[in-house]
View 1: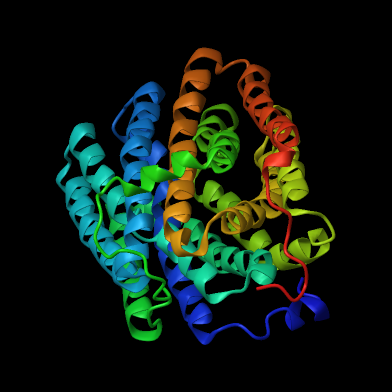
View 2: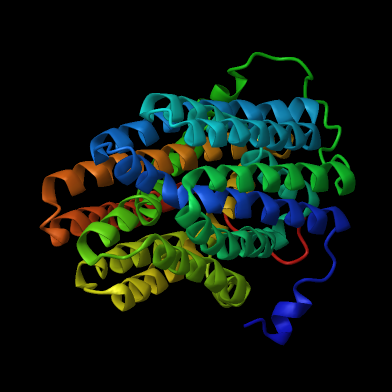
Length: 409
């Protein structure tokens, strides 16, 4: 629950920040209706093996990652709002096409291609929105701001999967109709209520599409991204490997999965800000280490689950790890990035995020196909990746900037 200090921390933000949060909520709700059920649609409805499902997500990782890096850098030159609106509008159109693909009974390859395009459209929203938050909030308050952003994001995740589970019972095509409507709502909110946030800082308005690759000249940031991708590979398991394992091994239904995913969103809405305020006594890097280690411990609970109730307990543990890790990761990026290149750095971190979230299902799919009857091998391997990330952050501690003190911008 929000404490008195939690409510006090909500004061003083630019009103565009709150409008941006409304767009976050609408966007995440529509996406959350769809993503948890894509693996089930491919695997159960179309009869595709988990290896091919994992290969699909791996392909989207490469393509979407490139576009996220490009979008973040482009927003430094042309502005944030334009890209967010066009990205959400394009995703709405693609979701509408995907609904037709499902209703018309097209096969895996057509559906995979259309979904790939939807991931490209989505790449023009998240990293740009994260850069906009950094534009609007001073450095000393960003960990709180990103925590609040996650509350808005997960309010959508609390509603979306539960609605998605019910809609999926009527037909997977209707999921994409709903996703199109919410994407349009998100675009409208940003267009109507968010004026441009990017300061005129002398950044060139023209450049090459691959200018974002210049971050390779910042070895500390590249090391941070390389370690962080391990955490995102682990985080991705609860949206891909976990639902398939729960369905096959525990007999959990799509509507029950919707409840489990909704629990994740509800916990973030209720607990994210209090947890973040408690963790403010620690450095941002220490919080990243703790979050990574908590992820490892959380996924070690999955083999212990023998029923729907056990699955709920696993989701509680996984979400607690998420509450610790997620706001700190964006905060570290904002601390490492030069202000005129905030979009570029957020875009490259979005690339890292996207690659991890899309490569994760490939790893999980291979593990499930090979060790479906040995859950300790599957989830122990995944936990080991999280522990490796925690160790990586500790080993590279001297590379990262100190947190700003009170009074700094």
